[in-house]
Amino acid sequence: MARYKLSTGVCTVTETPEFSTDKEAWEYLRAILPNKYATLYKEYEVEVLHNNEDDYVPLWNSKYGPRPIGFGMDSTKLKEIGVPATATVWIPVLEGVTNHAYNVKY
Image 1 (spheres, rainbow, N blue to C red):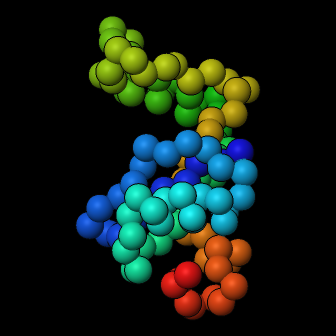
Image 2 (cartoon, rainbow, N blue to C red; image 1 turned 30 degrees about the vertical axis):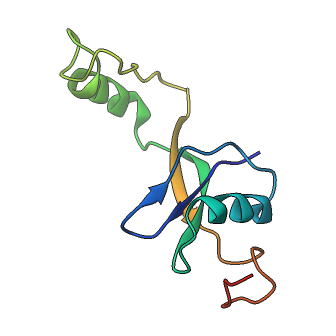
């Protein structure tokens, strides 16, 4: 199951349930935001590798960690050496939504 959002550049539908296919997400979100120029985005989680992790993690924690260790917010979690860091990115879904690659009408 993946998370999706529909964006027009001006407004975005973000509070959505997870969907198993791109087509399901497209049909559900198009009913909420019926704009013919909207783009469907899918959320991917990627692992971020750090060079010189033994040096990087203590420096990051001292600057961005929670107080009193760093200057970050209280909800910030400390990084640990050996634990992979993850980030989420939104990538546009370009194929598999409609039968025609450039026609978004039903």
